[in-house]
Amino acid sequence: MFVSEDLAVNSQGHLTIGGADTVELAEKYGTPLYVMDEDLIRKNLRRFHDSMNKYYNGMGEVHFASKAFSCMEMCRIVASEGDGLDAVSIGELYTAVKAGFPMEKVGFHGNNKTDAELRYCLEVGVGHIIVDNIPELRRLEAIAKDMGKKPLIMFRIKPGIDAHTHKAVLTGQIDSKFGFALETGEAFEAVKEAVSCENVEFYGVHCHIGSQIFDIEPFEAAAKTMLGFIAKVKNELGYEIKGLNLGGGFGIKYLTEHDPKPFEEFIERVSAVVREQCAQLGIAQPRMYIEPGRSIVGPAGITLYTVGARKVIPDIRTYISIDGGMPDNPRYILYESEYEAVVANKAGEPRDEKVTIAGRCCESGDLIGENMALQHAESGDILAVLATGAYNFSMAMTYNRLQRPAVVFVRDGESRIGVKRESLDDIIRNDV
Ligand code: LLP
Image 1 (cartoon, rainbow, N blue to C red):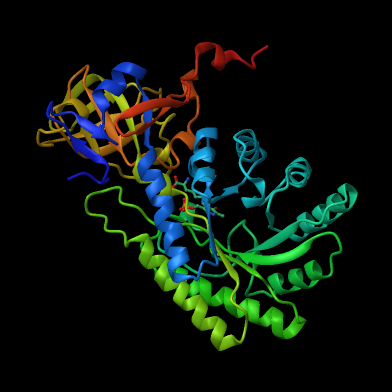
Image 2: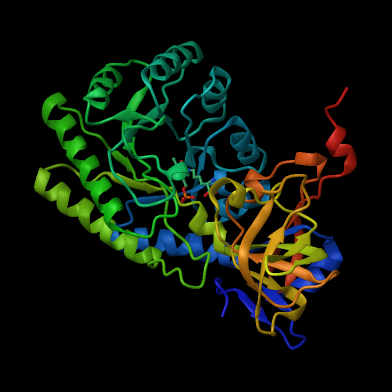
């Protein structure tokens, strides 16, 4: 009935998530409110790491992409499942450190890392750094020497794969700001330099072809290309690459008609390609890493709002205004991303109106969506927007000096605060 398996309707006709009544959550914590279902997050992590164990002989690691949703409680959940993290800024690293995350299970990314970030990685013992470009390699080499450390590094490679997704989240093609190109020979030249570095250990190669991808074929093609490169490095430089990181990007169901393949199938098919290619090319099976973000947390989150004004413009459209909008969910204004919504206190009723859900910013583009099917919504109703667990909280902003919402985790019908709602004093905290 709903896009996510953990949503249901209780005897009062209220939407529930992880067994908790969303109308009660809205009353208890206020709105707008992000609600995350802890059990579903854990289940999604397990689905990935269990299938890595099953289909890749236990030689795989799952690194949750914390850019999709980062807070200390999330780091604790990932750590308790035994998985790793992909971090892309000193802020994400700091969050993990403060949560007591085992930093040797962290991969650090970024196309323009600062010296402070590289130093921090070495200080806190990050597992590996995914180097993006030659100047960065040289800076890291100097910093490592200065600090008396020898970090493991991977190279971010652009495998030249075209995955069919929104252009803003495509990353594997040659015209991308991320990483070394294969086609031009840039990646190979860079590897030559890296293997001769004294203060870094060249460990692996990484690629990430994009996000919200439904097809498995681009992942298979990327794996094949990367293994071809690993073989070339072995044959021409006599150097054995030990790690292969295939990034994230697995698509999720935002709309009823979306039909993403089960994660298990991705892992099974990609693992098969890796094993076959290794055998064919005569190379040792690398340790395989994946970095799912959206697919772990996206389906596990919803956002609750209180409905304000209902504005009917005859023969044009009906606007339902809510007490949040683009500051807590900038994905419609950025990518025209589509969502489904439910009036949480009327969840058992049919969604027989078509409405535009509008935020409260001074900006006409501040919408959650247009032409959305919804129950008849009136002022005071609670609106739930579904599958907002990824790239909503993490991309939230304070435009119009709106306070960022709280994050609540639910489990077995119980709820607890994961991130407090910002106060007015938080808004002026750094003002002088
Ligand atoms: N690894 C790397 C290197 C990445 O750049 C990303 C996402 C991931 C893993 C995780 O990808 P996922 O499994 O979540 O698709 N803000 C956009 C998405 C940007 C994705 C950026 N990189 C959105 O809201 O759709």
